[in-house]
Image (cartoon, rainbow, N blue to C red):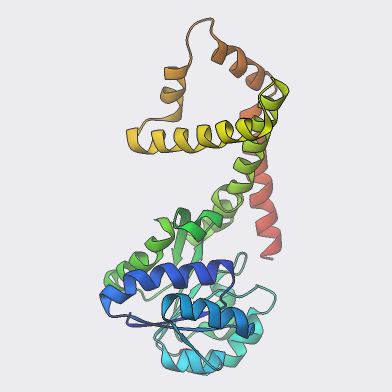
Length: 266
């Protein structure tokens, strides 16, 4: 992987391009990008040293690894435009709900295919990404792609059959956490803490707790016990959450998002 092209420089495409370029410069990789939004294209390319292409087809001709980060509604038009140039190349899709078989049917049958599902924190290099491989990949080729994706966060490899579940869990997951932070902050206000201070405390509590789990390598249940003393304040709060079935609500939300992802993917 020496010549990388990104079609679509929106949130995810732009984030991957900007962050992967930092790794790529040390590896001797070159980066090219194309987007119908010319102003956005120029801005992203200037920020990371990528070369703007004149068209989707020109980009594919110039690159051996192509990242397709367009909206699912328009990908068939893009594939139709570049199908002839994709032979023996690598195509990585960042599109939710578009299967590897669909990509193959719409012109990707002559190249190596992979799907990735990032989430919003990938924009700051703290994402959770899942990668599903198509056929024909060597371990060396996979390793290069994983190295590029690691610029956006933590990457796991999963069979494509689980990509909808990834969408429901980590793809939609940031929204669940945002709602929790908002609720925690509102609770602080209700208890008498000024709004700005309540938000600051709620946000750092979530950030610090997540980092604690990561660094200590503890199961959440064990970490929870470290905060919960007999007859104390924490167990009183946990009792209320359990009585309303908080864990069941979260599980149902992930399942609902997973099922919706399957529906959207046809």
